[in-house]
Length: 456
Ligand code: ARG
Image 1 (tube, helix red, strand yellow):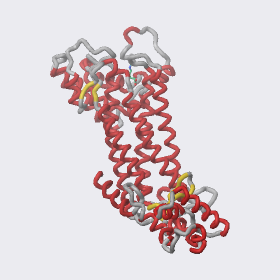
Image 2 (cartoon, rainbow, N blue to C red; image 1 turned 180 degrees about the vertical axis):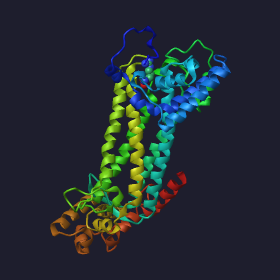
Image 3 (cartoon, protein in one colour; image 1 turned 30 degrees about the vertical axis):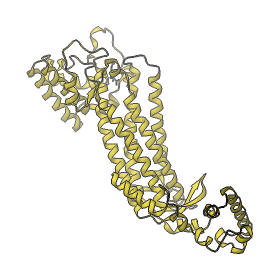
Image 4 (tube, rainbow, N blue to C red; image 1 turned 90 degrees about the vertical axis):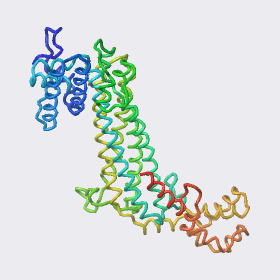
């Protein structure tokens, strides 16, 4: 098979060298976008009088056939033809004859590949935004059923203060909301057309870049042809937004893994998202949560990989840039898969209210309540803190919790203590009273849920 760029060559590379240089094994994923870009380009060429209407028609009809065949998986791709662009051009020429060779007028693979990837990411990012919304929906549903489900909140993985489980879940809702904002804002930058930048310097043909841009649904064009073919910041931004999103999912997965353990027993996952052990019959492993946590690593890897690929490249296109694709495809697949799994997992998990509640009743996570109690009676908070610290120590020595100490012990420590401390120590009341804006107080959580629902 003759190379489409073979004119100045006499020798040819061996198959294994071609294989090393080829991207067709992975960039065939861009067939649809490549054809869309070509249809717009051919149509524009005719509109600008660069090829005839008849030629453009022939090309467009041919491309449409190829689009169908590509979708059916009927197109053969060859490593000899390097990449998706040359493979499709070859098929087009086979189909319609030499007119196919006019398609590449006023275009280079450099602006072509950049255009394909902009089109691809535009679609994927919009889908990902919808998948995030689905997950937020699942979080809201669980939260609504668990406003008055109480559990210990943790800092340093040590019990800190009692909170509402809905409050805990909604923390993730807002993280995801910012993730969504980041993806949405990135669309502004993805939504620019590099097409018509040529290899690097533009073209001598009287093309209309705005026409192709608007045919392809882009909001505008890259203003500088060198920039248009050289930068991959739109992919980096996607990888970076994806890394942040995955970090959020991974943290929740880590919590899910903890919560399903025998030590916590706060939730039970549906059988659909767990697996058994081949040797230990009692096991139910949170594999899917672990995998999302694990896959976060490969997304970070793609981000660091591409940053590293680009950092030393002179303008404009360099073949190194072909390495931009696999990490991007892999990240799209990973993010989409992770979002679907976590939506199902959180939507179907069983919350063990009894376990959460009993654990919060058997700990010192209500100690702050006592310190606040004394402080609200005028004692400087530092002194109050010291006194309660001593009371906790007393409890530890006696082997009891704060609610079990007799009032006399409290009175001995400080005369400001009254009978009502036992109400204050009740974790349910502790939560109910935390009504500062954004706090875990039940009325605040309800207000938060209303805001969240309005956002979706
Ligand atoms: N397969 C190439 C890539 O993905 C397309 C661009 C090739 N351009 C070139 N001048 N060799 O980067």
